[in-house]
Image (cartoon, rainbow, N blue to C red; front, side, top):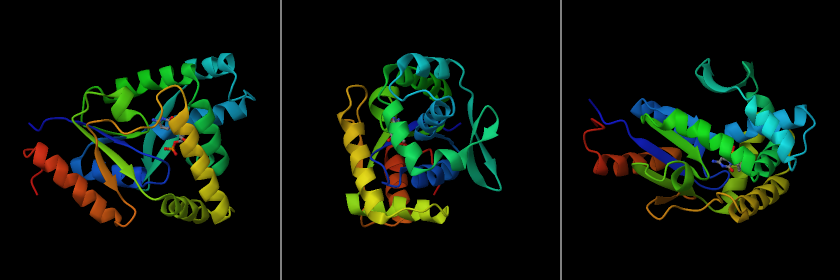
Amino acid sequence: MNKKLIITVDGPAGAGKSTVSKILSERLDYIYINTGAMYRVVALESKRRNVDPGDETGLAQICSGLDISFGRKDGNLRVFSHGEDVTEEINTPEMSLRASRVSAQRVVRNAMAELQRNMGRGGGVILEGRDAGTVIFPQAHVKFYLDAALEERGKRRYKEIAARNQKVELDQVIQETEKRDFDDSHRALAPLRMAEDAVLVDSSELTVEEVIAMMIQIIHTRYPSLLNN
Ligand code: DC
């Protein structure tokens, strides 16, 4: 039987982590865990319940009653909170910034870390986020750090948002991406950084397929029995 690896994909916003993690998980027949979506659900619940992103007590209450799940509808990945499909609602620029704020709180990080370790400990998973390879699974078998130039990342985010018919300006998306990266990499707890043993992949000038091919090559070199092609 194939070894069930833990693979982590970290990096800043808009580097293409979700796109490549999803495709890679399909090729390997692995479970894809989008940890950013989990922070986004906490952000959404905090908005719905009028809890300030800095209110630790209110956030603790939210975290103790979370029910986050992932599923598929018509081949697309969906995120559920208490069984309700919240995929559209959590993927707005407002929720991006709010997720970044709640993710700096210890009570939220501890709750997410426990959930993520439980989901991933059996292996056969691709865990995507900011601290997957540094804090959640420092013992992961293969770690990737996906990066790209700020302008390029901003443009990708802009296209994703515009495709959902949400109104935004490119300049504003680039500014917000820059702010979020700064905040995510300068917070006290589990800041975004590349693990020492991670493989850096710069996707600025690469297509999605080229990035996937590089990642598969690296996995294949280290674990030849895992892939047949
Ligand atoms: O990956 P994303 O853009 O959906 O993440 C939203 C925010 O959640 C991000 O700005 C910071 C936070 N986050 C985090 O702190 N740790 C993670 N592992 C994933 C996301």
